[in-house]
Length: 200
Image 1 (cartoon, one colour):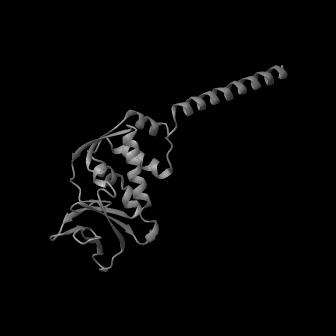
Image 2 (tube, rainbow, N blue to C red):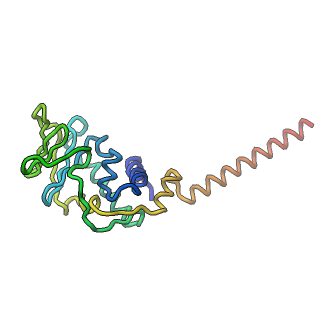
Image 3 (cartoon, rainbow, N blue to C red):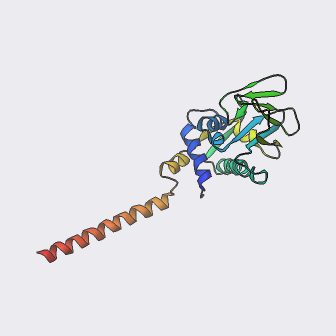
């Protein structure tokens, strides 16, 4: 498998925090993967709300990262690079923010905003300006299976750990690089021997 830069960043976070967390949701919050990109996910009843910072995203390109993220998790799981155990371990209300808590009925609060998880699309309202500073999208679990991949126990394979350790080079690439390195050393020794022989 080959990975782009976004996927490598996600995989590095999974490997780094995999032994210290019980769910991929915790990995996301500890690594701040979503927070750095201005993305927040809130879990409602049978729906997942995804919010995108309007200062960073246009309406048309906002879903690309999340769809790529979920697709990567599917691929890692199907290739047994991670193993997911279907047990709901949700203890995080919001991904992409450190602090979140239930406010009055149907509202989740984070430090700087109130999230309405009862409305159809979900609303993100800034506590100070009272403006909606994030685009909101609502997905059922069938449309975008966020909970299925993020709210369960998981383990990381040794193969994935080794892949990160070797900077995403395959065993064949590592062997080729070693062979190339030894070849250059042999050439260097040969050239040095010729120079020494000439100087004598």
